[in-house]
Image (tube, rainbow, N blue to C red):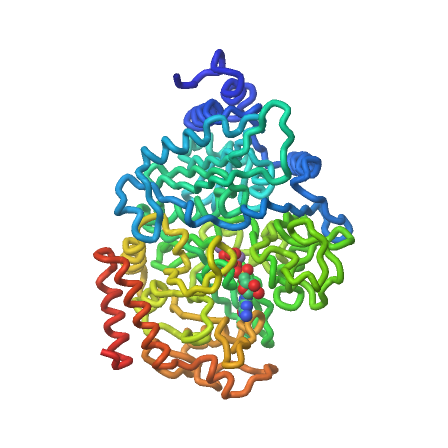
Length: 619
Ligand code: GTP
Ligand code: MN
Ligand code: MN
């Protein structure tokens, strides 16, 4: 029996549909909330208003429950640390599904199951899954509330940690709900449960979750069901699930692009500004590049976003980019005063939630790479005593900081523009020890899409599974493309044919992670990446030198500004070198990768591969 009215519809559903309790008249939303309460049977239903007072109340409760540890207010004001179950520390790609009506639509890069069958499975799992808990209803918008076509969502969750984190990561609460109601707007229903119901009188654990995890997307219905995990990428459903997987499907249908990219603003000593976006796989340097502190005189970097970019063509055929998020959910290890002072300054302002970092003895947090000196004593992320002799990292390699984006001093004012900024360049990059030069300019746009489509990286701790294997990761979107990967590449090609060709951004491939024979990094990276950005801009302006190689244009050793950098020309040459033998092996890898697409690989890209082989004279 369906639930539409309040009276007689059972204790839990009643509170959700009771006109006095529900702060909206949005009929489809009320119906979904009632239906979900009936299915999951929470103790109570709570509509999140997004206020400061609410945040304080929720975090107080989480401290009381032991989920959050309040940090020292002198050093980390209004900030908390959470420690997850050791089995719930990353995105679970094996358990992530795209349940399109037709299996072909999900493509070979996604797990698929028949949607009706999956719904049945999920209904069983969610049946009573919120017993003993509060069901929170979080209205949110990805992108700007006053965007031309605001993208609404509502997350239902039984985790207060998710509510607190969503408040940092997205625009949530009363204003959003009111606007949604006023427009009677469609929204993405995003249902999340920890899958840890509490029996009458049962004590809770600090990090409830379930060993059985399911992260499921229904692209036609534009809905999300996430079960069993409390970890950010699996549970903060506005982020990867909505803004990449579901949004990529919306983008295909509506003629735009949802991408795993940062956005930054670069201003030259001549005071000319450029906007760049960059797609790197998880834990490969987006947040670091977005918050770059340039080591070269006169160049200024400001940030607009560090993880997700929505792009569409403007009225003049220019490609415009916006960041749909409101916070940073950054990899903590390696983020330090030396490598990323802008992130550190934002974090130091407080209002942050840290997950799986280590605790210092004075109530602060620490992770590998945060400070030059390692503390002599810590409590590690699993609650154990830790000393430098412990032989294990104190913070989990995928530990994260979650911080409001407006705490970044170098946030560009254009971040607040609903229509975004025009891009001059797109960078694709991955983590490769060999083969891929520090920077390569594509021959043209189509060749740039080829670079993106064959992007590869060694696996990291950001997803569960073995670390260090080379995997192809098209546009750094492998875990996030919500439909067939070949169709996704075709969408890039056909969509861009509609823009002003002369104004298309220039595409570059970068690799900060190449190694030398002795195992060290071939390039210092971090702030010195500004030198590469400078070359990129000078290429756009036609003022920098390059050598044409079969894969594209790489800098001549003296084209990179190396002022103040202790690198010999031979070392620079090693960083940008294109090695035929390495590329012979690489092309085999690309060929195998392309074969996996079968029929769905766009002809243009097959053609690019053939031409590349010809340029190497391998064929
Ligand atoms: P997600 O947020 O998971 O999508 O990852 P991300 O792309 O934002 O990665 P992030 O910037 O957090 O970088 C992760 C790791 O890369 C950290 O361990 C950094 O120390 C390392 N890293 C980032 N930039 C550089 C660089 O220029 N050189 C080197 N050697 N390491 C870098
Ligand atoms: Mn990411
Ligand atoms: Mn990041």
